[in-house]
Amino acid sequence: MTFSYKNVYLGDTVTICGPYEKKGPFRRYFDKVYDDFYFGEDSFEKGEIKLVREALSMILKKVGKKEVDLVIGGDLLNQIVASTYGSAGVGKGFIGIYGACSSSALGMLIAANFIENRQVESALCFVSSHNLTSERQFRYPIEYGAPRPNSSTFTATGAACCFLTNQKTKVRLECATLGKIIDYNQNDPNDMGRVMAPAAIDTLKTHFEETGRVPKDYDLIVTGDLGVYGKEIVKEYMSSVYHMDLNDNYNDCGVMLYDLEKQKDIHAGGSGPVCSALVLYSYLYEQLKKGKYKRVLFLATGALFSPMMLYQKENIDSICHAISLEVV
Image (cartoon, rainbow, N blue to C red; front, side, top):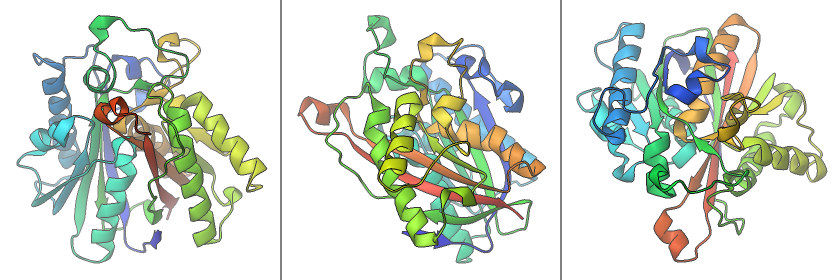
């Protein structure tokens, strides 16, 4: 399902990251970086909450606002507590979302519909994730020292926020495609690229069918969190089945966020709600403002599961939402 917008603009962004992201190729594009995982707090969870608070405070200062109509946010912790605790007191209204690693695009899509329909004038959309809180919740506490296969991805640490508005800026959110849940009979939490690639493929196909566009209509098509293996699945499937070549104008945020040659412990690439948001709201946003890219298709993918469902031998469902950004 694709929505078109005429009056939704990207006003500004804020990105905050942890020590591993700091060592990647986009350090100079981030607004703030940290050297440890505690961020001055006494637990990893409280540290993630602090990142959310800082990101929201910084974006309000950037855009010169004391208040906004709507705040939309999500994270990976149970009951999205990083979002609820971190955003308390901000905005006239709050919507908490859980789209796993697809939350950044989902939040932007929801906010865009409110703005386009003139129900609100502005909105803050944010996401966060923390490597150590996520590993403890979805896999193993790092204290266990459990080995990770090469197919595993590395949950990014940070918080990222964007300001959407009905006031004209250089970058417009011109359309968005809402994805649907895909079950492709996958159940390996250490191979998220394979889990989420089918959702990215389905949303790409839907987006192109409903807009009448083809890959070359975009200067860049970027998926979120598929990593090196999921990225290759998407390229091969789109080419062999749908005869759409994704070559020089396609990449994946999980591959882009880190220097995979030097940062070997990242394995297949980055993941987590903030992974794709860190790339979009920093480097890609700057390239759009400079005019290097005229139109970018951003697809954030998410794995919708809990450890309990894996213990009960259920598959891991996935989803992908797409956002099209263009220079005005």
